[in-house]
Image (cartoon, rainbow, N blue to C red; front, side, top):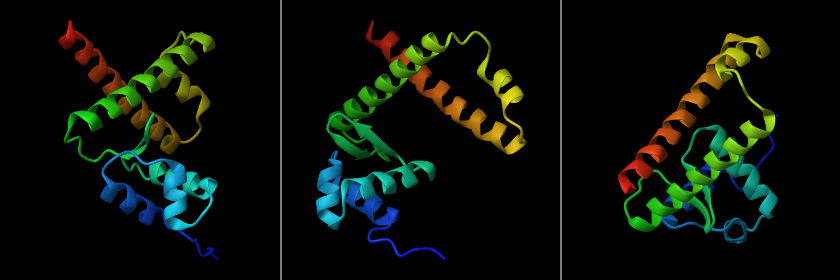
Length: 138
């Protein structure tokens, strides 16, 4: 039996979409009269559903359309932070082999391997965009 949630993930998604700018977790919590942990849980659900919910230094941004310089900078900064974090983790873990080959050995089901392949492809695409952006600035 599914429990009745005070706020549904779709409500949080609609609030972010309608707001347009980055919104803090606390402001979302205040809007729905729930605790910040509940909001973070709904945001996690939205990310698992591949919704364009991006954590930024200004708050949570619904980045379905990047229509102005402010939103573009927030998304770019968030992606650069993720890439820098991943590069650091790769260095710490001393990753020397290709991730998909390693995943094949570690993940049992084909579905798990497909999921990680998709995530790695999205990450690779994001890194390519950042690298292209840096090349254009030079």
